[in-house]
Length: 392
Image 1 (tube, rainbow, N blue to C red):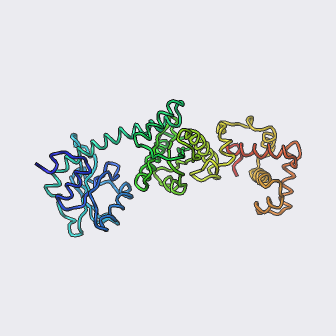
Image 2: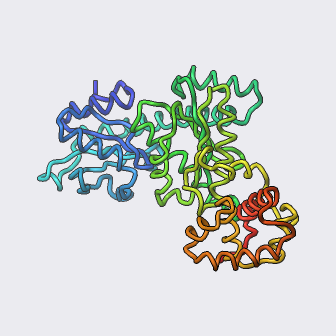
Image 3: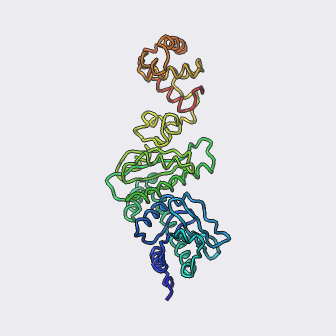
């Protein structure tokens, strides 16, 4: 019986072929992601495999449309042979990657590998079909978990754990991510799905935890972590050019039954991050967003002057100087401390008093009054988030 006549699972087939030909083998799909590999025992083999696991999706696609195989020397890995795997319609579904020695840059695949290629392609397609089905179910359960009715949320939580999509934990953290929806094009929204996919892949390849994700009808992505989110890592993922300018909000840790509340707050933190991008990182936590996350409950992007508090409307009608308005914002943030305000703005105190006199003449009331300060401080923040303040 031929090596692959029994049509084993992809991992077994790759290992059997590796032992038959005496070479380390890897299978990558059309996205250049590693999906199966043989045992790599030697330290150098393991080093090269780890590099492929973490970097293969950034490699240029093999030029195997016309030629069935191509040999490339990949930095940090060495010489590799890419043998195309095709379906019944001769469409490329992935590649078998064979590690070569430096002296083998002109070698051929060999009859055993060429014979195995069609079966590996069939197994890869079956794996992809199964993965696609599980992925679709995982995505739908994730969406139900954060947006469904109480009954749907409960059923989704139970299924995610029972079907081993999500790790069991005492508490979970939700993430909302996407692009600024104002003026976003369909291509921009596609980056949200890419960001969800890249994050899931990163966690799968670097952690023992299982994380789930999906995309809402509103084109907002959702991720559920069975542990606190490591913000710097998520920032690095979202800084990749392929997913910029996707931003994310991170909710608090809650039980799985209450994780929809974590997502609600993550969504508000995400809104705050694109309403005031200069004031927030591309990954913003609920606590870190502060008042902005609370204000983000309002449809600020649709606000006009008429939606602001009376004192703020009066001020913005009379003053259109970005410098004066920034001075007042700083003064109010400093609690009316003139010395601290002047220091923060790097201006002389007499200059500050001159500006404050002009501002006092623009509003009815005393800037020393706590209620007026509160209205102006909050009103100006609302105006800034709504994009109603003049640009410098």
